[in-house]
Image (tube, rainbow, N blue to C red; front, top):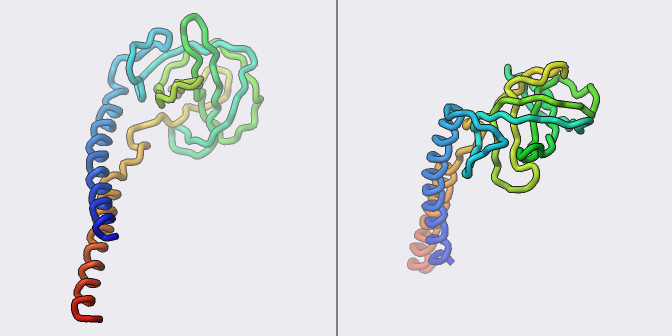
Length: 188
């Protein structure tokens, strides 16, 4: 069992170290993304667009508003108003976080014809809507405040601690096995 488990534990530790390198490169790319030129959702180039500044037009009558937990731009807890903006004029459908409210106490339907600017989340899942735009300023007349924009710091980076954990398990297993062998050789 030790001969099978020890290489497995060491392999998992090495894999987490490789993932830590990958995550560091990803977080560096995400940290740089907001400084790149803004994109128009109607004319997206191929590739990933996560955390890029973007703009898109949201036009729809009686859009259903869903409230999700979130923070204001100043860090206060509350709720973020999210709508799904339909596809229009070559622009794909997208979800939009319009802004923040301390309480979700206004109408659950909203009519919009507004150009939104903010940060784009592109989780790459491909399902509709693929993109989510976090508006930097809520549409006028909604009574919303700006919501907290996402940052690279929101993404967990635990791979080094996981690697240490796997290597510690391997060391503990080796120590227990060594103690077992010593005891076995003494005839205990």
